[in-house]
Length: 546
Image 1 (spheres, helix red, strand yellow):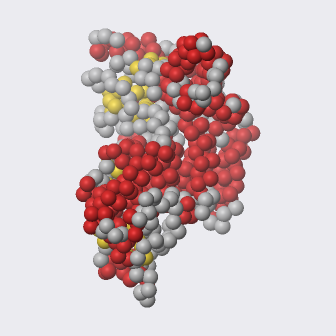
Image 2 (image 1 turned 120 degrees about the horizontal axis):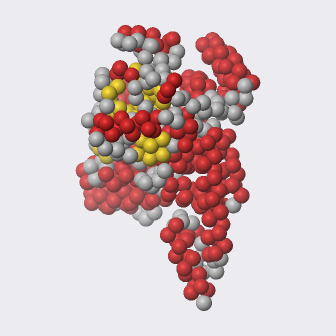
Image 3 (image 1 turned 60 degrees about the vertical axis):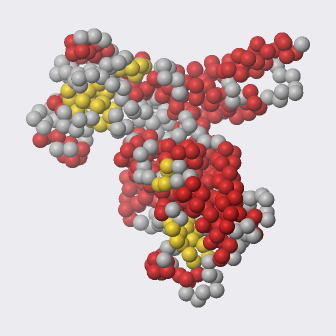
């Protein structure tokens, strides 16, 4: 009777919120109507929250962390709320036809929830004994920190690595059926020393090389996409970043009782103590290169490596990776990746004052999180390094000025910019443009009747060498490569056809993409009330249709 009455609500619930359904106990009666109402209430609260973010955060370069405290508080009220909220946010953020502004703030909220959860996970991970800080777990955290829409399940990864280890055992049995590791049916979880003699260890590594490189053909590549960092996809495609191969190799070896140590600063080298009784330290260890099919290094090569610092704890390993990914973000992925891994690098090494200085400057320029940033700036001021002291003093002064104006809680009001007062502005917000010199595609998000950048920027960019110099309209644009730029009017032109701009901030300004232009959201319409009509007129004239 219960199943008959509730099957309808259960079916609706299972379609809308599949992540929550497995947590219900099938042998126990479930009040599906009550659960449905609770989730419906969650949806209404999330929708109101996202609308509020759109209204109050338009002028912020980054949503201040304190704006998310309401949603975090709501999550803490009930353990089911987290699944309800994250499932709904995922649905919005991944829906190709959803309102772009709603998607933008759903993504920001989802990312903040993810960082909030992962920060706790990182602290727990780093508090474990060194031998229990598994590199594969940290690698999953590294990926999930940035890719909040495509998180990786830890249990799935561990199971796939276990499968690789069992394959190595089968390979080992072909030429060493008497190997002692074959006696133990289960795999090892954690080890603090190598369990086998030199011959047994080398045989395991030979079997590993056969499985990983000859059978599965794992190979390293230069960065081209975040897929190379997703260890779940890597275990399927066998294509990955250099250090991911090292993580997989070291993780499989540990399951078989072989302790391999990563060697800094080389992300592809591992070593093990093959000859502990040798007097010369460089002769005690054998090194292998995971990016060269597990090749063992020669004695001469080992001699040149033995003076390097050889013990690198996971905290430093992942801090190094975060800084590398930060540089990749500057070149290939855009500001979101830079911000994310800058934040992670500081979490992993709070004593890295160079990174802390960059982080403080970024937050001050974006006018976000100023109370917390003030504490970081005071740390710079207390440093023994003079350049950090000077920077800290300057930044503290700027932060205190902003806090005195209460700028963080009261963002600047949107003042309409009328076309009648700016007739020299030729283009309009929402137009997709092409840069004449650099050939990039972009979308206009705002304009000034003349260059409003700092004198330092004007001199650095040689603005006065332009034909119309600084006294011409300049446009804020989002570029297809993920960057934000400030372009002179004489350098922009209409392309042969419009295209969607691949930039994570389009939703901050626009509601939807309309084939040849972007339709502004409510906040952009308030700031540029005449631009939509101008945009549509230009599109009609240039392309012959909207």
